[in-house]
Length: 235
Ligand code: C5P
Image 1 (cartoon, rainbow, N blue to C red):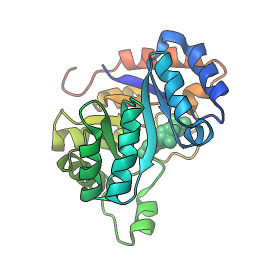
Image 2 (cartoon, rainbow, N blue to C red):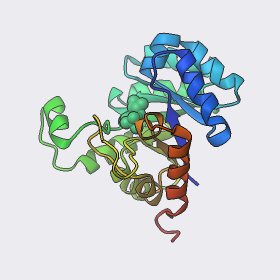
Image 3 (cartoon, rainbow, N blue to C red):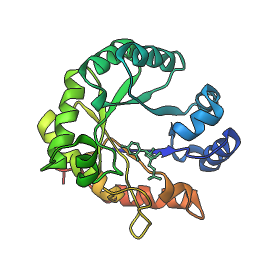
């Protein structure tokens, strides 16, 4: 069964832990991203570990191999469970990171951000992109060949990744919205049921839960919707 990861995209440790404590046992995995890590640092990871939560550190590393490998080593010291790096950082960067990660830290290669459209990608990469799906699968393959254990992609690319690369790669999908919710800055959005049907392992669901009037109730709706969906091939 796919699991939900809630991003703690808030400015302070107090607000982050307020949200975690209000959701109680409803989920056991939280994402510490750029905003919270910049404001609270490793204390955010430690506070989650003290509450027996799993930690997804979403720093989207992209630098020279030595620098990335050293940062991965420090995340490992913090007992982070999942850590992102950009697959576009290249094979040597990802191989160095994989060596530093060891067995307990799962690295996730970010393929193409869910906020980007084909024309955004063409603009950044300076070439025609006929199929965003093919680019995502290509980057996912590069990540896997480099020893990275999982990838981040939109729900639309989750099933193509699975069919091209098999079931052992961890697939994490952000860009999830409950029906009727605002997409905000995301471009490639899908519902929780679509994510489960596409075979995602983890659904990162932020504003649909954290900005709901009652986050615990929004999370309950997400679980209900997920329970009604079956992964491809099991229905
Ligand atoms: O609020 P929302 O559900 O859009 O939040 C999505 C979260 O997932 C954000 O914290 C964002 O940084 C993260 N993320 C993403 N796309 C990726 C990787 C991570 O939206 N490719």
